[in-house]
Length: 356
Image (cartoon, rainbow, N blue to C red; front, side, top):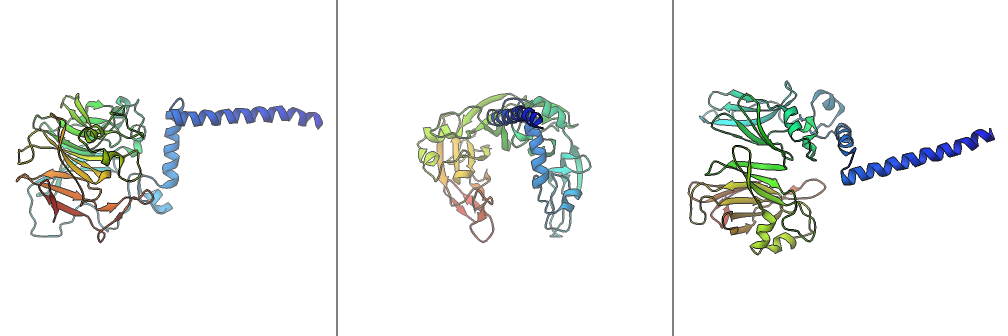
């Protein structure tokens, strides 16, 4: 027995050292994204999603079984569309991105409001898009269940351009075949400018310029319809170069997602304060909207509030702007709370925008 115990001590010590070594390796893999970081991240994402009901508002074990991961239960007792005003008429169309339980993935549909039916469906090849962006490090490029079609734009030839929110910019044809994939971190709005180029939001690969604390440097990307990035503009650099360092450094505690650009709206018609080629920007985390001239590197005007954490700025036909104010106070614990009577507001006006 004494010999057995004596033999076990070195074995236990060896196993302890091996386990400790694997622990250090795991920490290093997560911190520095070295092998086997990608393999570990995939397994972790799946386990975390299962045990936390991530990807939907599942609230019970029954929901977990009945609903797919990208589905969530709503407060309404119907699905699809419900016409509340019998006199309402609209001859337009809706481009809808939604999860299809039948296909087990997100699809896009062109819906006719007048005839109340789907006219065309796009179903992109997830595997091909993932393969073309496999070297990216964002969750969406390695997690089939989190794949999404964000902000789709329909082109004249029936092709569709969209981003995957934390992943690549993608163009597919009318049959769902992949035309091109740009493996960068694109997000939020996608618009077409007066030169028939794509204007969208992008995260810079490297900080431009360097800031005192690390920052996720959101920017504007100008992309050709052939899938080439023609130009990038750093929002942080534009703010600093135009005298707005107070917004970058002086508002509350510094956070990595300082800018959170969620709309880059190209100006298509000249007005009193805007030229064709300018871009109206919504900088959510600073509750700020601005008009930026890429050609001059100039911020023509900038206004913070009265909207809070807004999510859209659009130019109207008369040269005024509409802004959708989420009007919430953000909180790291619960996402945020409404400031005024549990509702959002729409603001309309010129560069001095007023609430309506």
